[in-house]
Amino acid sequence: MSPARFVSQRSASWDELEGMLVLFEGKAVRSRTALLKFARLYRSACTDLSVAAAFRLSRGHQARLEDLVSRGHTVLYSVPRRSIKDIGHYILSVAPAAVRADIHVKICLLLFFVPFFLCGTMAYNSRAFAAAVAGEAVLESYQDMHNGQREPLKLGDFVGATGFYIANNVGIDLITFGLGALGGVGSLFFCLYNAVYLGTIIGFLLNSPARDNILSWAAGHAAFELTAVALSAAAGMRIGFALLAPGARTRMLAIREEALSSMPVMFSAALLTFLAAFLEAFLGPLEVNLTVKLGVGMSALLAMCAYFLLGGRK
Image (cartoon, rainbow, N blue to C red; front, side, top):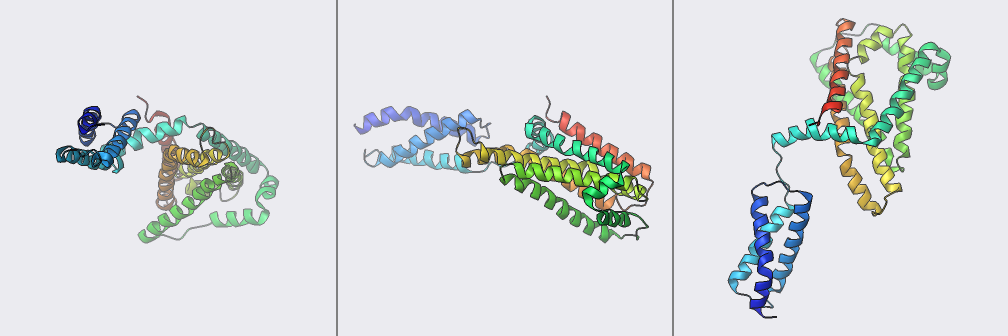
């Protein structure tokens, strides 16, 4: 093949690549189809550049190919900058819509809250049931912990408590998520374990002398903290199931794809965990009327439901 014929056959592909470069460099929306087409054209240009010397193309043609390949590499492998608008769109639309559409989230919410309320009701009505689940010594320790007067706290105590609660809650969420590596079963087990244990403890305390104190402490943040556990389990379950049943994909590809798909769920869990820790540290110890804290807790629950049920709807 002569150099002139090579240039004649390939120039249309170069022109098309250059047109897409202009669009992408101008911050045009990069759809999946457009990116796949762009990647094909970019690889072809790389091949053309590698054989340009063999065809003894003019310096002008070689320089054009070098420019296309250089710009194409920058566009294809650079990370686009996210604006405040993009971040806000992700938080207010993408994340809640993804959580709402995820079947794993629905399963884990049911798996957590049904046993939680069931065990809470049984522990409220039967101390024997609570003792069988958690042990008498554990029940006594929780009752002593929440029964009695608390010492006045300073601002530094609130800040330190926030860090402690974040670390504690994140630890629970990470364990719940990480156990998903056991084929998803680990996340389901730990989700169920937390539901039974926490429901039993809270149900027991609500029918004990520590009732008002536990309500005062947990009313504001409980909805956020408990939902975050279920969301963490859903993300771990999704990735674990991909390991067991990748379908037509390789296991590594299935894990990568499901990990990316679970990111909005993990983001939501992290957001709820932070909010729960903040409320627990600053609102929990405050000596204010219980009605105020119950009002904050109900407002938090309604806001969370509105966020996940309405966010991202057109």
